[in-house]
Length: 354
Image 1: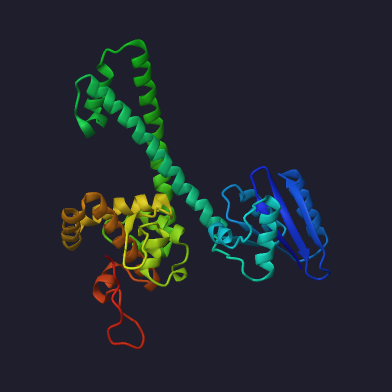
Image 2 (image 1 turned 90 degrees about the vertical axis):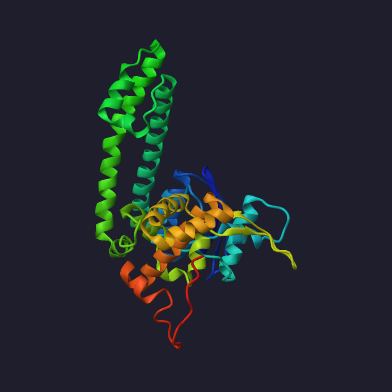
């Protein structure tokens, strides 16, 4: 077998490889994409089993597809953990590739879970809609500001037929009129696009049984349910709700030592789109369920509304996790509780969703 450690960059990659049968060691710098493709295709023609290791990177999709096409085994590692295993104070591309190779040979490589290609493609659907909605919101805010400057304050009524007629009736300067016309045209083009993407998400959620179960929870729609399933990936990857909250960046930073315990803001290390959707969905849940509303206002009075919203989003994420892991809908969750079915005990351990 040939084991290759790759220090990947957008323009090139530095590799360090070893043949476990002959002990031959090799180092190369491959320029993207033609030189790298030629090297790996030539390696595939030799018929050797190849294992490639690299740090997680956001610009390596084409490289992953190439290795998948050539049927090479690809290990993707946690970049932060790999960094902690560096002993020398010097850092070069060659040393990074050698370190990855050494970790793979010694079976200390911190391999991470990687979603499937279908999962990644559906995530692009979520991101496309999310960014398109953000663009529409910015356009609407500009039009609202324009209306306020002309003395028209009607909030959501501005997007109704009468409100739009009033907005278009203002006599503005040449460039202000041009800006108003262009913004309205962009808004008219974005609305059908967002409606089409929303319909596609609804269809994908209907194909996913796990997303259908999560939608039974009050406040959770197709977008939030599908995003939760796609980004979490597999419920069995986590052992408890605290791990899910940590994965999504909904736990506070901690800098504790000795008898001193210091907590900060949330880490925000997970998926930003799922955190946003959970906060939005949790606010709907608060309006729907009296027990959630009571908890929210209690936290808001003690810690403020922003912290209360994040806390309810964390509570919702944990509930969705247990619904998915146990295969329950919302009625079963409220009936049995998160501790039901724990073997060897009469009561089990109740889930902490605070």
